[in-house]
Image (cartoon, rainbow over all chains, first blue to last red; front, side, top):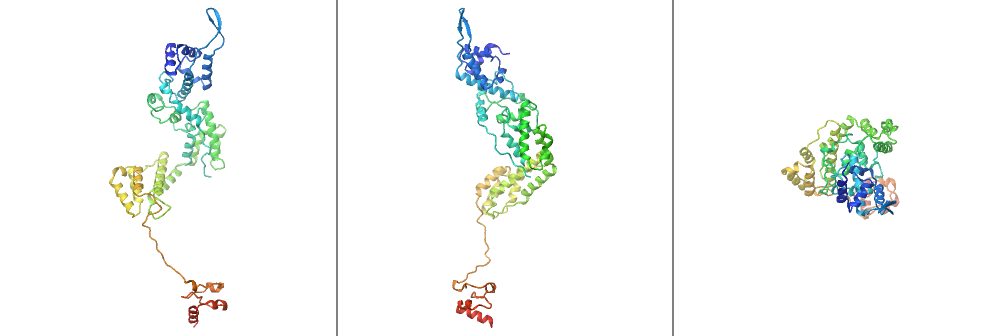
Length: 132
Length: 288
């Protein structure tokens, strides 16, 4: 389990999580470990960011119940988190460790190429022919 | 070598996890220890894959695990591809035992085992050796160009390398390859002779077939055929227009003709009237 402070610094430094409130919001929503990343799909990560921005419900401020205002999650943070989840899935597939180094942005940014290639991929139409 | 084509084809087909399906048929089903294969990437412009691989897909093919639910799905997909491939051929019997279990991997391995035994590889080796040792290039054929001759040699060596991976066979080394090719050049064209001299004097050409082929194509650019081609003309016949006779019957056409073109046989009155004086005289002399 990763220390909360370490995770907060990690999200701020590598995933542009803005300030401590944003990082804390993401950690509270479930991003509290590097190894949790592969469990999120693209849509899950989108939903997580949306939930942190607009959690809904009420909170107590000075003993007064108020609508929960949520925290700001920058769009760039959302984009990077989605790519991070994609990279983590790749690491899990090939058996690489998912840690602070492999999940750092200098490594994760390279996965845009793979993501684009996979999205644009088309299977070949014709199979090779065998002589009768 | 449809098996090789299939391997290439499967590299282009992605499975459930977006891994090229060729991971199903890799030589070693075990996942390699990635601690021995550090990740590149970071500040370098390359991707974060192991130093032993040259692409994401290369690493995925080598490292995607076997025996997972995704593997089973991909295996079934491979089985579908193979079923389509061998449909209507005698190879169908080879994959039949694997159909029920949708075991594409086993079916793929069974195909070469059943159809590419040692005899088959020996036949491929023999054919390739025939190309290397017996085919020569004279430069006289407009269709069989130097480029095609080079491609034939390249293809033959690829076949031999494939053979060596399956049966015990020693592939010619690069120097041998170049020498065999130079021996196959039977042209006396000056460009070819000078190219051969250049190649024989430069070790880098003698040790590398591709560099040698580049050199020889540069010195002797590809063209229809070399200018040294000579033509032998056996005969030239011409006949003065006024001596041609029209309206001959079949018998007259088949008859032996004289110097003036007159058929030396009985002629009908209508044909005789068309003859020139010279022809009439020749015909008259022939009759006497």
